Length: 324
Image 1 (cartoon, rainbow, N blue to C red):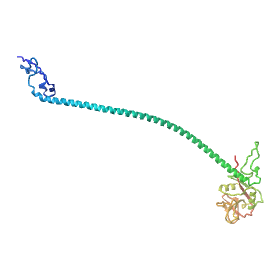
Image 2 (image 1 turned 60 degrees about the horizontal axis):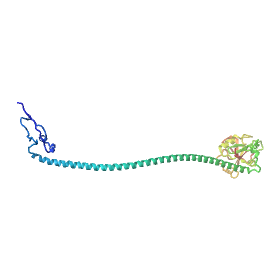
Image 3 (image 1 turned 45 degrees about the vertical axis):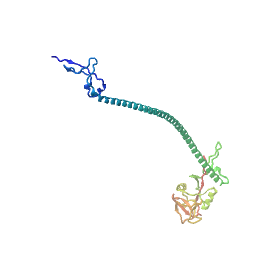
Image 4 (image 1 turned 90 degrees about the horizontal axis):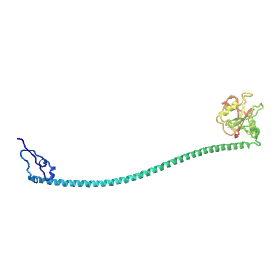
């Protein structure tokens, strides 16, 4: 005999029981029954007539859970509102600070542009000052050179005047050539017949006898506004030796301005200076006046001879520094 399947619908009045683990007993379902109905319901209301005493504790739990849910939702809403307000205020503050930073940045950019312009102007001014300094330095150098040239010219003129004043009548024709077509004359530092070496002029006469004593030779030099030769260096000694020539015998030579007449063995030049280093061949035993002897070696050249011996002589005068 075939089994008869009966289906019945169960409806629960309290929906909170869906949260409990006893779902199987309280769900609306269909029970498969073989031959016997599981639940009876009234035809008119279709309400389960089984006693619901076991659902009372779960209602209290459901109420508590509902209250907790309400409180939790309220707390969440409150926290959301609080943090939203705080975040909004913080964002507003950040916006204001950002605006301030933007203003500061704009100010700094403007200041930087001003500094850049100022630096450019300073660089230009510095370049101008450097150019001016270079011009001033060049002008100072030129002025210093002109001052030095004027100083030399003043000294030259003073020396020329000092020398010229020694003459009662200055021998212009002995120093200067005749006037040219435009009326100018070219003047030399030494008189005609004198030799120039460094800053001095030398007169070496190769005349025949009778020659002169040391005193006579010096007087002759003084008449020509000069004096006997004073040798102050090796180059000057070599110059003199190269321009003197042998004559008569090996003992004769040319008187120079060195003597110990005032004090024996204390050799003095005619300008008053002491003789220190010399170019002697024979210093003692001959006399009190000195000859430079062409036949002797250039640097072992001087002989002390009697001042009364007659010899040639050499006069020396200061060269005149004429301007060009």
